Image: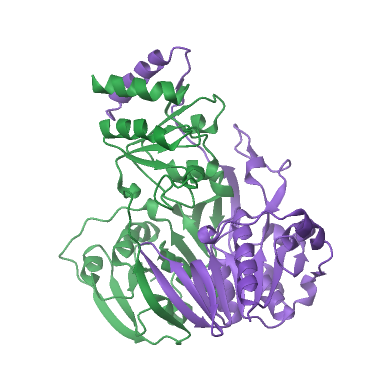
Length: 307
Length: 259
């Protein structure tokens, strides 16, 4: 009898980890989900958890559950613990790993059961390469959100729900929480994206880009380099440290294709690149491309699409 | 006035790494090293803290013997002293080993108020060392910070989460990991570069850090590292006639039902 645990302070993220946990499970494996809120516990039950264990941080900070969670991992020795890849989840995972003297894989893109061991893939060198690692127990893994889709709910399932309060140590106090006003589009959900790179010379040139985007019903975004021009809302660029996107169509203009950017678009269905430099790395990552002047290509695309 | 230690990593420049198209093996032999991009922002964050609030900034790095080449560059960016550990164990170190070594080194250096790390390194980007250090040093953990201030003997940090910014206040000691957006790292002026050579550089030996051998053994076994493959169609139109290219492209996109 073995156990696989899931931890996330965000129930919807925890639910997305269930299929992943199922892939690692043996016939007699039970799956327990740890949450830090009672909200949506039912969703987890319906989505396939065998037990839901709720830790309520009395100071309101999910991070305060770290010592208790680490102690439970030590005492009950699960086969693997999957952490949802949110900011809070990453901190909780790393601190638990340190307290347990354990390894931790960050942002795993793929997780496999291989000859009795758990194996993961993750990006290194800014997305240039993929490292495959064989884990030692306890296998602690932060799962990258791009991997995930929510499972189908089944409301006939039953499982146990427990709840305990966890006191923080009082060191950190939260003075204020400020909501981040998102002025730009939610790129992670966009079906089509037009991306501009340094090949676009002036802010005024964005006008034709937006016109094209409107015709194909796409959102407009940029690379990290262009983000520094402040033409777009801050921090709304695509790349390994920015948004990772998976649209049906990604269309870039004047993007050279540094690895950090390419790793943010690799889950796109169709990648199209337009750039004047035939040797730009973006073409190796593209399904279709045009080597040419974007100032010539964009107006041609617009007039063809308007017909 | 805060006593600040900033940790940084001397990494291979990924722009210099090439991938063999057939075997997908990485060729690292031509890669030069650099201070990890994100760590430049971490060093800058430390430098600005002590410039504004007084105190002292010390840098610390763990790497192979090559880390020695980074010392002057680091010192020209603000720290008044640097400690370094150059040891072969770093070649295979994961975040577990790195945090163990850095924590032991910090204990050896002495007391501190704030340890600053970047959110992750440019090569491994594990995003673990900061919060691991907090746990190992028994210090408060502040992650994903995009603003740091020192007020009434406490650290005040803005922590950027997915949809909100938390303003946190904590007593020292604290380990803060900072986002690259926290600042724009300075480009050292000639005067700072020249002054850097006169600042103290201290080597710490791993054998003096009183670490069990087990703490230097990576936990997860790296099975292989291969170039990331983009399995794409790579149909590129490069005629001199742009209109022809555009019409061919649109034909393809219509067949794919994406326009």
